[in-house]
Amino acid sequence: MNTSQSDPPRKRGRPRNLEPSQEYRDRLENIVRVAADVFQAHGYEAGSLDDVAAAMGLRKASLYYYVKRKSDLLRLVFERAITVALTEVETLAHLADPRERLAALIRHQALLVTRDPALFAVFFDQRAGLEHADLADVGRKEHLYLRQFILTVEAAMAAGVIGPGDPRLVVNAIIGMTSWSYKWFDTRRDSPETFADTCVALVLR
Amino acid sequence: MNTSQSDPPRKRGRPRNLEPSQEYRDRLENIVRVAADVFQAHGYEAGSLDDVAAAMGLRKASLYYYVKRKSDLLRLVFERAITVALTEVETLAHLADPRERLAALIRHQALLVTRDPALFAVFFDQRAGLEHADLADVGRKEHLYLRQFILTVEAAMAAGVIGPGDPRLVVNAIIGMTSWSYKWFDTRRDSPETFADTCVALVLR
DNA sequence: CCTACCGATCGGTAGG
DNA sequence: CCTACCGATCGGTAGG
Image (cartoon, rainbow over all chains, first blue to last red; front, side, top):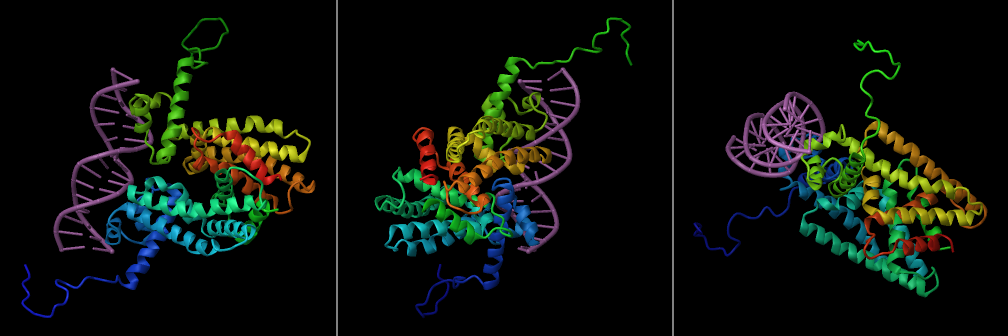
């Protein structure tokens, strides 16, 4: 099969297209942003590739130059949300004081969602559209996130910073308090910082 | 137009089919229940009438014996949710003690959602599918509900039961804490009462 | 409550 | 990145 008779022991075949161009990556990033808006407005199943393409000034078939399937778009939206969510949370895990750590986690979660409500609307509501493997991947990463919360709430309970109770129920209550903001938060009118402070003050007296 | 020449001054024309039969109403209630499940699983737009009909052992066209349009099904799901939500809340409004009233509202909201998470999943996530007039109607009724919450939180702040802050933000935080349960609550494993107590204890120390 | 059917739209492919 | 097209499925109607 190797028709070339040259000797240099370099890689065989055509050199891989290692790096997609900057334009390609920028355009894909825009497509993902637009897809998040479409999936938020109509849901994943009902949000069509025609909608996404039209908002980008493209034809539907051209999207297949960037992704292989519709579900790739949803996966990319989720990857963006998870990346944003997980990067900071690992530094917060090292805060020693339970009260300080819990406050930082609540604050982080409130800021996260209120800074891009449309992105997290898809993250929270459109999980059913993910392929099986992608769903499992999201579940694993979310588990890491939740574990930090559980450990911190347990520490806060042990330190008497918050009252006793089932940590799982308390964590879900706190996550709900902050996450729910994607449904009502008005980026033009409300301040993420003020809301974050409100949530912290409500839980930590 | 009146071809009848008889004299008794009774109602003209064929007597109106005043009351739908009990079987009809039972069957419609089942259809609404099934529709809620379908709209929860696939979203309103993507959830098909074929899905609903199949789950009822009917053909799609037969659903049009019960409703005129697909959106009627969504409206009926919303009407059920709102009816359940609003009936009890008016009695709670008359509790004099701010602390007691706030505790009762939080408890009511937590029990409401955890007792039928699938129903409220549609109520909270599928609003975009409603016809314009139905959406306005839901908005009006929800406003009444929220006003009770705002007034109660303001009274609780004035009484020093909870810390100061923007009542709108605090109410949204509390509503989020309780409503979010539709996403994680497992009816077979978790107790609505325990969760309601947890929420009350988290806000009222 | 059924069979049969309509026009519109869907995700995806062929081939350039 | 395009035009042209595929089979499948959608909400809804005709007519019984």
